[in-house]
Image 1 (cartoon, rainbow, N blue to C red):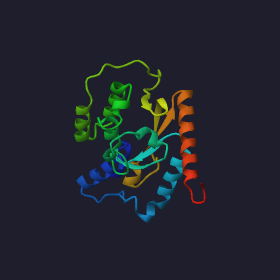
Image 2 (cartoon, helix red, strand yellow; image 1 turned 60 degrees about the vertical axis):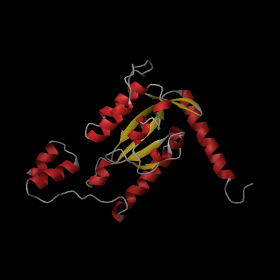
Image 3 (cartoon, helix red, strand yellow; image 1 turned 180 degrees about the vertical axis):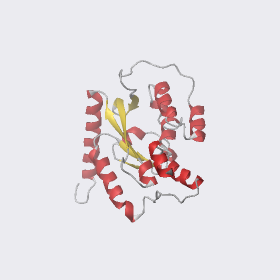
Length: 214
């Protein structure tokens, strides 16, 4: 009955386990490490998805927004950020709003900060920290009408990006259920061209450094 109640309330798996514990029962849903062999197919799927999204940036994060994996196109997003804010295990929300991260390059910081902070209601400490980084800014023009784009200065010019979030809908493992794939998509032709050109340049540079190439 507890499980059915949790299902009818559409509670996340972590909260279903907590409800079961409160009722005196053992948790029903496992919480595996991503290094566990049982999740090997998940790691393979993540790699395929990230590569398949190229030349556009994409990341996979956990429940708290900590980076699990990213594709090579994400390097264009993070360029110039402080090293301690970038890489596996770092928090992408902190990267976005920290003064040493993306914030100085975000042209519509007020809208983008609001978009991020609304998503962090379950992470009170992180939300409080990030709120302190964001000054009181007036909203700027430039919304797409149906979504808030990320307007970001880069070495390839201004990028205008939309984001989508994908989850593993049939997950019965807490770790897997809490993973989110955040994919960035170009909001205009100029951004699509810039991302394609950046990916081509990166591929050429990598090929030039392969053994046997001069």
